[in-house]
Length: 128
Image (cartoon, rainbow, N blue to C red; front, side, top):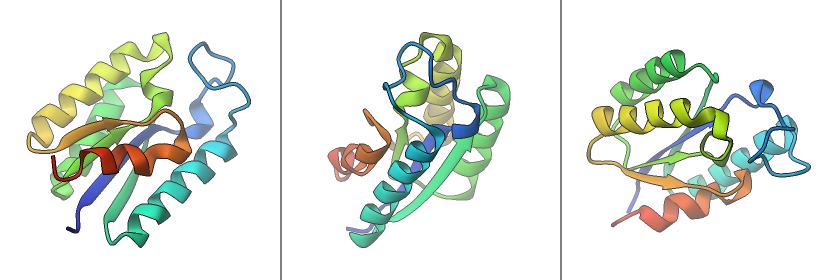
């Protein structure tokens, strides 16, 4: 089964890597490398995969997500731990979850625990 997957994460250049909820030792380069490796792994399995890096501004992120969801039908949307874990990102997370609910009601929502397990998060929900 070929699926289309959207990976949504905070723009790595805007992340406060000292914030509570961010994995120790994480950097913007590590985030990019991990997400790209997961994307490559999903594509190697025959899936189409897009990455959307959003700013930590809920209204702007919500608009960018709506535009991405309007442009393709996704089977799974993975929301990154960098959005989900820091307490300061609660409104951003809620905005994105509600955006997926509105813009892709048939898509499964998955969560990674770190950038390099994004592929495993998507695969957990494919076909469910």
